[in-house]
Image (cartoon, rainbow, N blue to C red; front, side):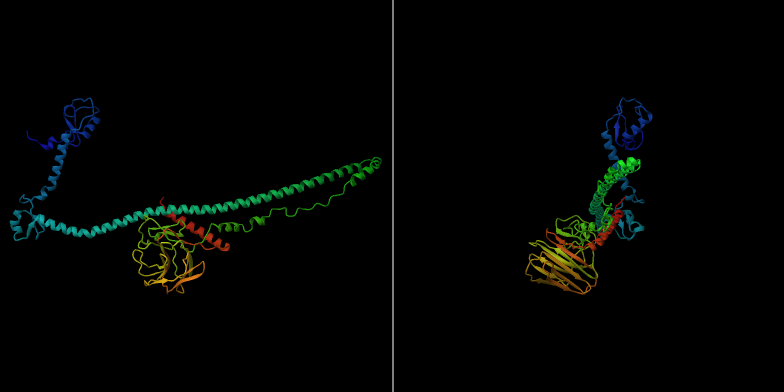
Length: 490
C-alpha cells in the first residue's frame, strides 16, 4: 500500500496533521489536545477508533509521528510558497527570465513566443540582485531616519523618567523647606503662648494675694462692727457697764489705709500681639537667604554636579541625563536660571582652592549654540592653573597680571551701560571690565573643571526686605508645588 501523507499523518478526531501526538495503549495516535477534549465530552477514557476502555489518561508522546508531521508541514509550506507563483501559467515552466520591456517574469518558452519577440530578457537572479541593491540604497536614508527617530524616542523616554525623578526630588525639597518654616513658626507660637501663660499665672497669683489680704481686712473690720453693734443694741445700763470695753475694742487697732486698685494687673496684650511676625522674621534671617543667581540644572553639562539648593557647582562623574535642547554638552558649564536684558545685576562667587584646576565665570548670550563650540556671545574671566585671563566673544584672550590669588570673584553686569566688571569683593580690587553694546538677553555662565565647588554667595537680607523675600519664597514654592501636581500622573 502506498504511503499517503495527508491521510496517514492526520488525527482521526480533527482530521488535521498531527499536533503534539500521543500514542494510546491500543497503539492508536491522536493529537494530545483532541483526545483530552474527546474524553472530557464522553466522560470516559476510551479509544475513539477501537473503543477500548483505557485505565489511565497519561500516554507518551509519539515522537516519531511528531517529527514526521512537522517535516510534512514544513515541506508543504515551502511547496506552497514556491507553488504556482514560480511556474508559468501558460507553459508550466519555471520563471528563469525577466522581461525588461514588460517588467514581468517569463519562462524560456515565453521568451521565444510572439508576445515577447525582440524583448530584452535577462536572468531573474541577475535582475533580482540589481533591484535588491537598488532597494537597499533606497533604504539607507530611511534606516538613518528610523535610527534618528528611535534615538529621539529613547531620549523622550529618558526625559519622561527624568521628569518623574525631578518632580519627586523637587517635591521632597519643597516639603523640607516648608517644614523648616513650619518649625520656626511653631516654635515662636509655643514661645509666645508660654510667655502669655506665664504672665497670666503671675498676675493671677498677684490678684489672688491681693484679694486674700482684702478678705482678711474685711473680716477683721466686720467682726469689730458686729461686736460693737451688739453692744449698741444692749440696754442702757448694760451699755454703760460695757462702754469702756466697747471703746477699747473700736480703738484697739488703727484703721487700715484705703485699699487701692492694682496697677498693671491686666495682661499686656499689646506686648504679646504687637509686631507678632517680627521675631519670626528675625529667626528666619538665619535660615532664609537670598542668592542673586540660581543655577539651572536643565542646562548643566552631565559632568557637573549641582547642590540641592542650586547655588554651587563642581566637577564629578558623568551623569545619565536627558539630552534636552537646553542642555550644554560641549563645554562643562551651566547657566543661571534667569537672564537679564536690562538693569544692573551683581553676584559674588566663592572659587575656593584653585590648585591644579580651572574655572570660568561670566555671561553668555541667549542665542549661543549649546551643542558645539561657543564661537561668540561669551564674556568671561578664566582661571587656568594659576593664570587669569579675559575672554571676549571675538576670541580674543587677554592675560591678566594680578598680584594675588582670589578666593572670591564679584561679577557686576550693567546691561544698559554695556559694562561687565570682575573684581575682588574682599579687597574691592578691580580685575577686568568688558565694554559692549548688549542687544539680547544675557545669562550668568559658570564652568568648573575641579571637584572643589564654585559657590554663589547669598546676600544679606534686611528685616524689612525679609518679609517680601519670604512672601516671594512661599509663592514660588507654591507655584512649583502646583506644577508638580500637574506634571505627576494620577
